[in-house]
Length: 208
Image 1 (cartoon, rainbow, N blue to C red):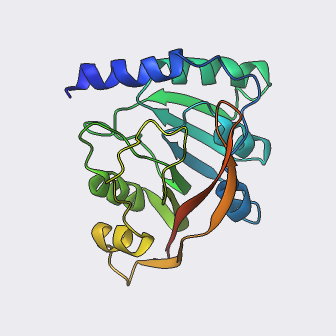
Image 2 (image 1 turned 90 degrees about the vertical axis):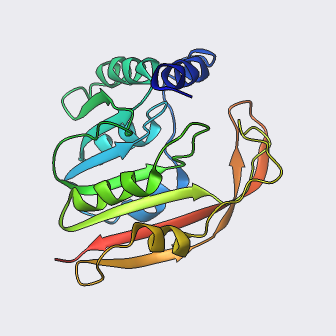
Image 3 (image 1 turned 120 degrees about the vertical axis):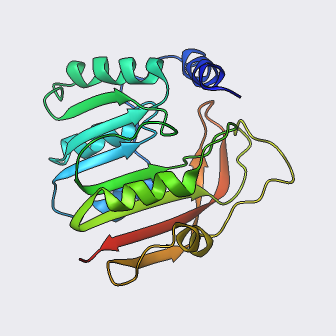
């Protein structure tokens, strides 16, 4: 898939869904970030914008990035409608050739899975290097296939959080893995169906 086809795919995914009016944040985000002092946060793959809106309401200044112009434009309109336009900047990046500029206290990558060619290791390494000292990188991946997932390949394999951390290969003198586990939860899909799913949770702390 080339860049144009990739953009068309994700624009089609979001255009096929009704525009959300009050999207909800990811469960692992609220669980792990609520106790952190607000600062500057980068939301990689912002999608419908539930994480970005929740973070802004907690006092964070949010840069929300997505490959889909549909998602970015909808989020920009949504933040204005909720009076959060001064706290959220929605930007389009494909992450293959461009990465959002700046330094951040928190970077979130929730379910950054895609059917096209993306060097996730390079993206997550760039994210780790974009953290300020004492900043954190939160990576939450699928650990199982939900009934509503676009990827229903029965042979798909989800790397463990420790495998993801090893792949990023960060200097332990500068970055520390604070959490790497695989909790389960009951999730609700876009069509209202529920299912038990596994999350792969990785939290990396930049200590120097």
